[in-house]
Length: 183
Image 1: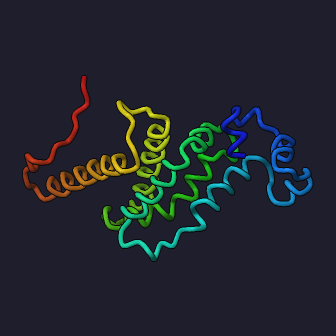
Image 2: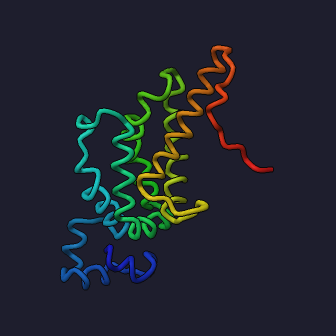
Image 3: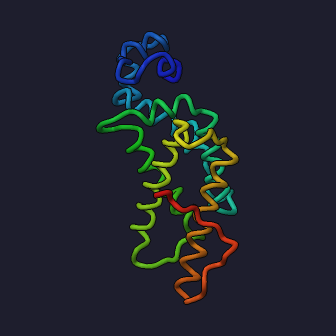
């Protein structure tokens, strides 16, 4: 599937194309997968999710870094996979699969209260949108798997620091630079 998705758009790839490329029959394909969308999701699961051991990470940042390094190594495939639209799309699967990872990532960052699910959903949506933009080189310059998480960390640390300071009535730290949007 990865090879086929380098050659043509996902919507132009049929199950017959996949079977011919792999040397299997359609019955074997459907024994393992519901459809070609399921195959794309399985590739992510086998390539990344099944290898995860959340207990081996000391922090959510380490997990996030590993995930971004994986996406960077496989960026050609995931650029195409993230463009898949509709029911059973990879984006939907990634959002569902990423929730436990996001909860782990955010456990040390966010305050815990009745808004936990909102925070997780909001930040998951923001990180997914940013991931898609990053993989598609949609920022002002190409960032590798080292620079991109550092930018994210800088944003989150700045926001968390300023929110905490404001909450306690303390003036903002002039050394913390928050990028301002041009008008």
